[in-house]
Length: 565
Image 1 (cartoon, one colour):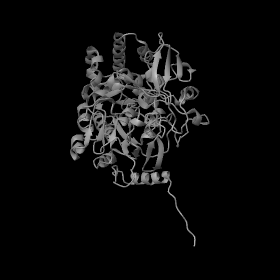
Image 2 (cartoon, rainbow, N blue to C red):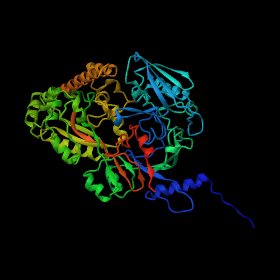
Image 3 (tube, helix red, strand yellow):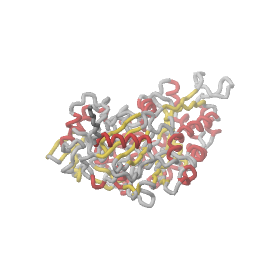
Image 4 (cartoon, helix red, strand yellow):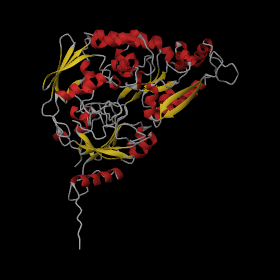
């Protein structure tokens, strides 16, 4: 007689529960079993068509729980608390009096998730990656750095090429990775980092498959006493329709998707279904000034054409239909958000407001003068050469507000004889095509900031018109005066100087109508109080509540959450 014994390790038991959690996401409260089940927070920061084990924080295609949750930043500047520094891997920073250097003091006693100590060498190495591989410099750090030096075991000093009073806000965006793991990497661009080692609260990837993955606790997290959740669950959500169908069943705890008529289609389903919609930046129509067709490119460079497009749009309808009333029409031809109305020069606003006002008759007259007319009587305008004028408008698939906006724009521009064909592609392809100037028209939103500078810098700085940067400036319009003003803002000595620079930026971009601003939207944030408490809200505005990537405050948020008793 023979006997075989099977032993379940702690890891295999945990893996079994992880499988069950992916299969049955609603099971997120204790089962009353003799052992405790991991507490899992289901988070949907963005939609993904494919789940890939990519946790490389330098990659534009990494999974949306990579930053902050795996790779903790040096400092988080709290945008709702006047950019108050929330110290993480750093404990303080000091600018040189001439603004040509900055010193960071690093937190002692921090370890990576594999138990190795976090040191100044890791910071030095992480910045050397973007210096040696500028294609990975997504945040424009290199344009400021002269050199970096380690001054002691916990001191790092950055020497700048030119003065910058705001440099700390940029430097802390660069991810900090472990030198002992990454020093053997040969191709940083294609490296997936499928088994990440990080300093953040959730570093262990479990049960990753085509439906999603679990991201569980870092056993060596330096602030473990503040972490009340065992794992994050990221489920694959490919489209907005899929998102809405599942959030109304209570599947998600924390999300940031568009829900039309949110009160009726979400909040009314349960008293635990909450939301907060802080004001956001504008959504704009972008022209590709490097369009492949030379005649289309020439047309886009004609200011009268861009203004004609702007005057043919009924912005109120876009808000009512595409955004379900969530937001307001853009008034500033620059695209500056209504959040910053106190930064706007009223005379500039009034001067360019006619080009933001629906006036199809004047728009058609302007097109006629450009020689963009209907020559064959088919109700569609032709190019001055006589070739058909047909434009493609690119949007990310599954973004229902963008896609509906594109359909409405197609109809509105069709009313003045311009044929526009909406085209949806998956988000990764959308980003890639904008980066490669492989499009004609597109829609985009923009990142937020404490001042309008963040918008103007990300949207119009020609330094950011390279593939490694986000999509926001990929219209490829270059203006040296705009670049000069953007460079002056960080070194301005007074609030009045900064206001004057924003006035000039607002006037310049409005006068050139580089993009066509459509409407000011809101920041989408939904939370479910059934299983967790401690949520940021309109009544508890501790920090920005968004789950979206590129929202560093989400680390503070997740550490504030705790399961309900």
